[in-house]
Length: 255
Image 1: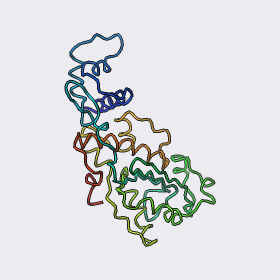
Image 2: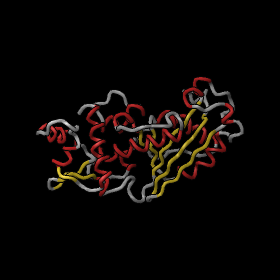
Image 3: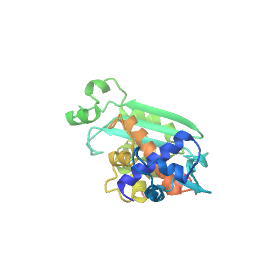
Image 4: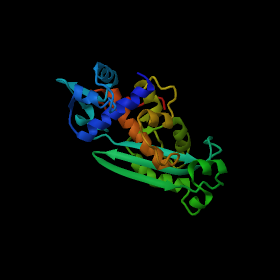
């Protein structure tokens, strides 16, 4: 499967979500045919190539496994998180923004805070994120924000894009508050290696492209957390393929 195939597969999944019920294979294959092009067996052949783990085939009809079991499974809390920082070094840079999205038993809770880093935000970071020194003036410091956010992390599997980066900032600062962040962690880059092996790049922009997503607030903590959630949702069903598993069972053990 090529990277373009991932986009086409997602468009098929989106089509099924839109109508809300399974379709026959010939009807679904018609979605792949542009207006004015001749119909033929090639569309059915392409359809066979595009039906990845998200799709359920039964009695000549195609549906979605997400209609049979949810993400995350009932009873399992999951937190998608993202941080924006003044630079790349956890020792020399500071957090300027934190966002968490907690999913649990059908409920969605969002935590989003700007953080006063205590140092000037470099111009490059301001251009990248849109966060300026005036935006964080008067905001709480990182320890106040983490103290407030800590209850949302309890008992949850964490889902993070490029997890070592975010954890490198969060763990030592939480440690100074006396908290140990040892939750199970899913790195969506790791999931992408398994679910999308044809992708040569696995950053958030590449994953958003592969899943035909728009990310209107790129390089902002909440916008990136939302995008990470969307790509994780798609990959969860690609990886489980009709055999539901706890998200924590798909986490990396060494992070």
